[in-house]
Length: 483
Ligand code: UDP
Picture 1: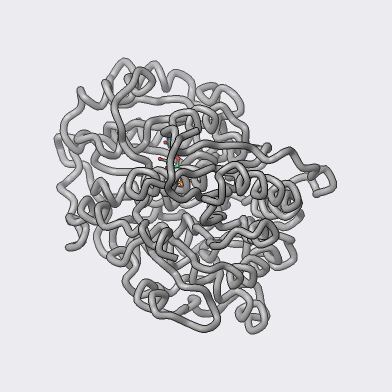
Picture 2: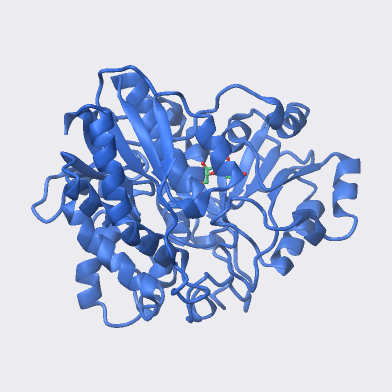
């Protein structure tokens, strides 16, 4: 689309806005700072309106195209999302190879690198077959999760039991110890095909020339120090984060949230959102509504329709609520909070970075998706962690026990945990910290309490946090072009 001479980079985004957004941000950075152009390649299974609007908003230097659909009808109903993404990628290798060959021709030899995100490891084969010179993995999560995946081939051989049954927290080099039940969700049931896929990715990452990670040293000093050192058994690792969705100018569709926030006192609002794919079971959704109302705290809640049969990632593939989410809230709830002005509920989607950057936002009840965490850190908003799936539970442990930037939602005795969408397994029912009671004592600070005025007390930040905004300027996207 652009008449430029700079290098061209092809990027493969596996399904999920949490993968697409930071990859697009990397593409924009390469374009604005290094004169590159980029093609974002997406999968046919994720053609949601939210994704389309996002792709359409990218600058002309970043174009996009979709792979042709692949047949996944032979996979069992209820297969884990990690299995679906990995299968879709592996089955798309021939189509991707011809797309990359076309791109090579059409960009006149400028195609300098191919970048695939975390579930796209098999696509490195397509890039090799098409003769793309540099082949990288972009890991949109953190260095803790990457350390785990890189160690998976050994752990698969040495850990005989299920991770959730480990008697001691898992200790990996430089990392905060992670209790077994909090380890990456797709590893919680070794009989599920998604476990095997994750081990496969851990092996396949070794074929990459480099791994770029959306994290930074100050938030994960331990694994950053170790992964920055060259090692024979893995590619070079570059923490290039935080790459977050740029705030940009206000537009009409932001008005509902931002104009309401404009009317609230500074740092008085708790923002409640479970990411682009999260869903709560109906019962928890109703309890959350009542809890928010009873707290008297100001809140802005992105409401999504509840999960079906407890699958906490129900909205993952379309990033939109499947049904009218307000229909599941307690009777009269929306009218009451609207009349009192204490809360605002919005269906499906909010301009999250703009909300977190707003002066009225004082806290974030989050599912701990890594993009949400980075956005919260950059804008200095303390978090309350309510992890649902993927690596969110280990993120919550790292943030509460390591960084000190989040408190975990305590779990009451006997509360039944939400179940990840794992084919055939009942891992979710077995996993968790059932019966262990609240986790506040393991946190570095007591939970925030609303004062008499309803405003939360001033947060106590980790020392480095104030520098969060400065960290944004230190991104090292240049490594992409130096490789
Ligand atoms: N997001 C948003 N509005 C919403 C929900 C999510 O803009 O209502 C954005 C959010 O800012 C983040 C991404 O979608 O950049 C979600 O990524 P994350 O890793 O936090 O969670 P995931 O959706 O992958 O579980």
